[in-house]
Image (cartoon, rainbow, N blue to C red; front, top):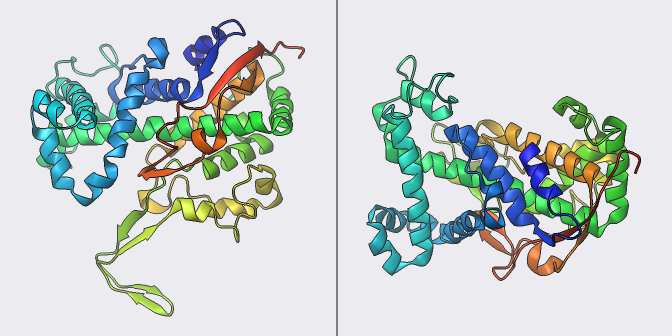
Length: 359
């Protein structure tokens, strides 16, 4: 968070425009990569916040609808040498190159090339725990590098784009509706009286308006837009008056739920107050899924949302720059992840001023 804050402080009124999609994606990528591999991708320090990674991710998810219908085709492409993939598809080439990079990281961990993974050598990660498998509960095929590379790819994609998009979209609407942004800033000053005040996550979670803003941001950002199938293999499901036979895929859509006017009146309006007026609405917030197969990184993402928005709105005044809601904000494409129009350059802002302790 300190690195992210430092990068934004460089973007004062004279420094130009900040592309929030790139900046937030760089921040979330650095967090999830350090968590997964014990080392950050350092995207925040790269030119344009490592935009090439975000472009690669977008290229990959645009292949998702094809891969969902023809998974063998995508697996075939990923097994080919990179120079051959490059001649077939530029999108597949970028994803292949990125997956090869991840595979190298996994192989170094699994072969102990990074040391023993102790605290003296390197931060332990989930992949060190899988490798060591204390108790021997994991079958060997679950520990193969290619299998783990697939998991790593999902972790990085899900841990980057969904949270980054929620932060970008939420920031846009806070700037579009300045009265909402100022109300949030006033609440934050109660626990952050100075710019350098340290605050804990429980303190931020106790702020009702910040929580309402985050819930509304999760609702309208549509981080995961695709239907997600669930299959009951051991029993028939009873949904009176219907019986759903075992083995039947049952799918739910977060997008349709979050835009249902019978649950969320005026569903396309950004209105955090709805969560304060009706606390029971949280029963219908499906951004992280529900049940035993809900989002694995939910707690990490929640922490990023609270700390990022608190830092941003306590320290900076911003204005929207060259951003069109219809093109750059609204969800227009379902590629498993919700995406804007393909010709969008992202949500852009100009940092107008830094906020002092007395402001």
